[in-house]
Image 1 (cartoon, rainbow, N blue to C red):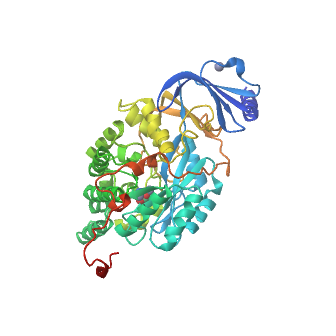
Image 2: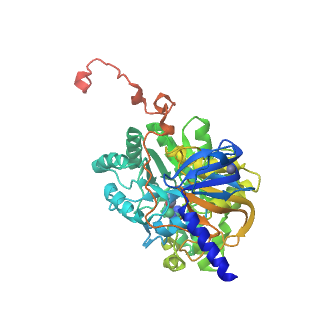
Image 3: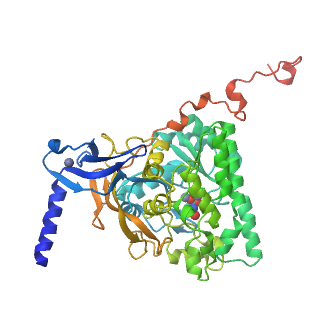
Length: 515
Ligand code: URP
Ligand code: ZN
Ligand code: ZN
Ligand code: ZN
C-alpha cells in the first residue's frame, strides 16, 4: 500500500515535470486593480503567462498540468525590494546567501527580490561585479540597488556605468558613521547624478552623527545590552534624517525612496512631502509593522539581540501608525530588510551593543505576516495586498507589467494562497539559515500553497523544488514612472538655476568678474 503511494507520487511528479503548460483552474485571480474568478494558462518553457480569464478548457494545449485553485487566491509573486544576502557587514557576513535566502523567499511566496550591492573599497563597479558573482547561485529572479558610500569624480562616472548595467537606484546611508555613511554634500552630489541618469535615490534615514553620540552616552551610562541599541537611536533621529533627505531631494529636483520607515516621525515627513506634491516613496518593513521594541528588553540577551536592527523596532504605537499609513496609501509598499545573523554572529556584541550585527529575518515571512496583520485585520483588501507586496515595487523600479501582474505576456511569477489554511511561523520549519525567527510562534491564517517562478513550480506540498543558477537577473531601466514629467514640476524649493536664472547686471560688473 505504502509502496503504491510512493510510486503514485513519483509518477505524478514525473508527469508534472514533463508538462510544458500549467493551467491554474478555478481560482480568484487578484491583481492590484481588480479580482475575478479566472483560469490562468502558463507556458513553463517561455516562463510567461499566456492567457487569463474565462473558462478555456477548449484551448488548453496537450502536456498541460491542471492545478486546482478553487477557493484559493492566485496572485502575482511577491517582490521584496530590500534584502541583504551574503553581505559583509559589521564584522560578519549575513548567513543567507543568494541560494538559501531565495529558497526561503520562494517558500514564502516571494518570486523576486532586489538586493543592495555594496561598493568594494568605495568602488561601485567592483561592488557590482562582486554581487553578480554572489548571485550566480540564484534560484528566483533578482536585481540590485547600488550603494554610494563616497563622492568623487570616479563615483560620478561609475554611476553611469552601473545604470548601463541595469541598475536604476542608488542608496545613501545617512547612518553607520565611519563605515557606509555619507555626509550631506556627498548625498546632494549623488542625488543630482541620480537625476541626470534617471535613477531613483534611496536613503537609510537616521542622523549618524547623533546616533554615535547616543551610543557613547549609553555606554557611559552603563547601558551595554541590546536595549542600548534602541535607546541610542530614537525616532527623532529618524524623523530628522528623513525630513532632511526629503528636503534635499526637493532642492535637487529628484524623487526619493525612503527605505525601512520605522517611526511616526519618519512617516509624517513622507506624508507631508507627498501632500506638497513631492514624489517620495515610503517603505515600511515587516518587522516595523508587526513587532515592538519590548523584545529588546528581554532578560535573555540572546533573545533580545535577535531583534537588533537599524533603525530600531519601535514602541507599539509606531507599528500601529505604520500599518494605518500603509492601509491609507501614505506608505506604498512593504519590504523586509532581510539581513540575518546567527546567534553566534550576534554574540559578537555581548558586552557592547554597538558590536551586535544589525538585522532581522523576513524574506520568507513577509507575505504571510502582511496577510495576517493587514488583510485579516481588515486594514487592506486583497488587491491592496498585491499592490503593497508586488505591484508597487515593480512600478517603482520600472519593470511593470513584466512583474507584479497576472496578465498575458507577464512573467509567470505566481502564487496560490489558501486563505483558510492556518500555520505557525517557527525557526524549526523555516528555510533560512538563521537559527531563530523574530516571528516565532506567530499564528497566520492564510498560506502560500504554491509558488511558481517564471513558469516553474518551485514550492508545493510544503516542499521546495529549486535549482541553483536558475534565477535570472532582471535589468531595471532608468527613467521609470517617478521621473515622468518631473522636470515640469516647479516646487518652490527646487534649485532656481534649473529654470534659467538671470544675473543682475550692475555697473562695473566686469571688474567684479561678471560678464
Ligand atoms: O539593521 C539593518 N537594517 N541591517 C541591514 C543594513 C541596513 O541598514 O539596511
Ligand atoms: Zn478550465
Ligand atoms: Zn538601512
Ligand atoms: Zn537594509
